[in-house]
Image 1 (cartoon, rainbow, N blue to C red):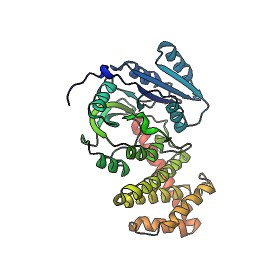
Image 2: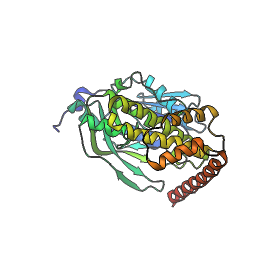
Image 3: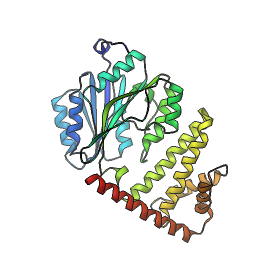
Image 4: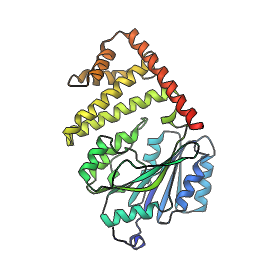
Length: 339
């Protein structure tokens, strides 16, 4: 790729950071933006009603640098914070950064060179995975590519990560699109829509994002209710993937459908005997499962039939067993992370 002077065009990059209970990590995150070699950016910190000192820390940084905007709101969740941040963006490009993560100093210099030289609307880059004890491991599960059709299909099938972070977006791609409120797995739900809107995109292997393991996050939570809602969120996301596959890539419909059914069955089994999911949500999942009478793998079809038609007492027993396994696995992961 030929060298170009980014400074000659210097498009504004909007960086949206939702902030909640991140006091231990927030300084590292913000400082990684302040130390960027590319300087034409705005940092939008959305304090989502954080009960610690995060709000004060954000305000202190805003007083130091005019490029930082702080938004304070009542706690509404990650999706609402990101949506609010996007509404206050002024940049041509958009980048999501989580408050417990950080980025390499050359991140926007590198990404804008790709975007401007190749006229790419999305540039997805590699990342490091940082364990809770500070070990850094590279994480690139793809080869460099500009094949837009293949990239869209791989996003739809989740062969490449469906997370909002680690990607530079042309801001206008998000016009009319928001993260779903009150839902887990919001990235998995919404990302295929954005990739389907873009015509030119790139996968690159530059390692620029540091994804940090946080034992307090929803994805690492040992709380049963959080875990069940994650499974329900996966069901909703894969049902959305199924609908988009049906419309744009019918050959992927079966893959997405199996994932949606698996999420539906899993969430109902884990919920059996707990009442964590409301009766309305349970009815929604069951309605979907009743409609899935076509071809499914044998084990998945058996699970579907059992959860729909099996004795309630048996499903409660199976649910209790699955919850015990999940609790054990989650605790083992946390213990491993502390070593």
